[in-house]
Each structure stands twice: as C-alpha cells, then as structure tokens.
Image (cartoon, rainbow, N blue to C red):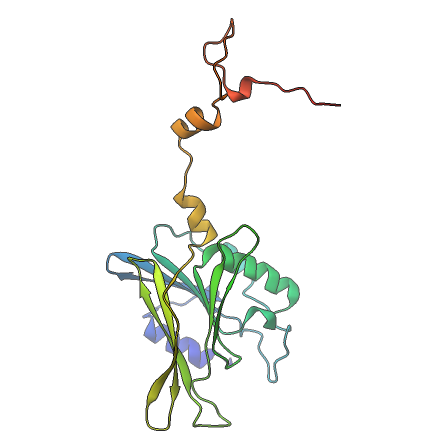
Length: 231
C-alpha cells in the first residue's frame, strides 16, 4: 500500500498497461541509443522498508523473482539501479545480491545515504565493477541543500565521466568533475565475449608442444600424453 502511488507513477512513465507482481521487485528497461542497447535493471530494495530503518535489516528482491528474469545479450552498457547501498541489507541477502549485481552490471547506482561518492570494487582476479552513490536532491531538514550527479557516457570509447552538482541558492553549480574512466564490462558479458573456437582448442590447447610418432596414431595430442605421478 505504501508504494501504491509510486507504482501508478511508474506505470505511467514506462507505459505499462498490465503490471504484474514481479515488476514491484525488479524490472528492466532497454533504450536504443546510437544503435547500441543500454539497459537499466531497476531493483526495489524498499519493499520491506520501515521508519526508522536499521542498517543491515532489509532484504533484496525475492530469489524467485530474480530467477525468472529473461536473459539479455548484445547490449552496449548495463546499469543496475537500487535505492539502498548493499550494507543496508541483511548480510546473507546482501552477499547473494552483490554476487548477482556484480556478475551482470557494468555500473551500479545507489543512493539513500545522501553522500555523493564513486568507487570500484573488484574481487581478486576480476575486472571489478563501478559504484556511483548519489547525494540528496531534497533535504527536508535543510531545503538549501540539494545535490545530484550526472554521468556522461561515451559508448564508442566505452567510457564514462561523473560530475557532481550542488545548489548555490540561485542555481546548480558543478562541484566536482571526475576524469573519464573506461567502464569494466560485466563478468557475464566478458565471458561471452571470448568463446573458444574448435580450431583454437585443437591447434593450441590440445597441441602436445612437440612432434611425436606413434604406431597407431598419426597426430599425438596433449590428451594422449600420460605423466606418471612422482610418489
């Protein structure tokens, strides 16, 4: 009931005629920009929100909803949008949700804490994923405080630039401008971008590395070799 008005607003903005229950937890919007597909995964982390909220007390979208999402391929950029930073979720939910997000998204956008920041999180051996946290657009305790970010994306160069803006009393001024950064393709997209062909597998990975002769086989491959263990 609390989010009913928002759901009505969302249905009008995205022209959704028959919204279903799953859309309340997650939806994906795809925009064609200059011949490239830009995807926005919209996640509802406020479905169990209460006032006051407790850090580590929320849950991400239900697993059943996330498992039913359609697969997407061939996109130029994929962004995940969620209101709460992940540490506002219960530890187990946060960990599982982070794995999913960092597997799929190139850039993750969050807010809630009213502090603008940008950082990259990377597991050992991975390319990492970029997090961008928004400030406060309307501060109820101080109406003169109003900030937001803009993200300039160059799909051709696969780069993005974050700029922070703030209200000066008469207009919004640029507070900070980052340098262009190459966005790191998601692990799911990266793994699909490099497919081992049969010729590469046969000519390189199975290559024994030397010429061998055998009475019953013309081409001896790496699979044919046996190295006894040294006990």
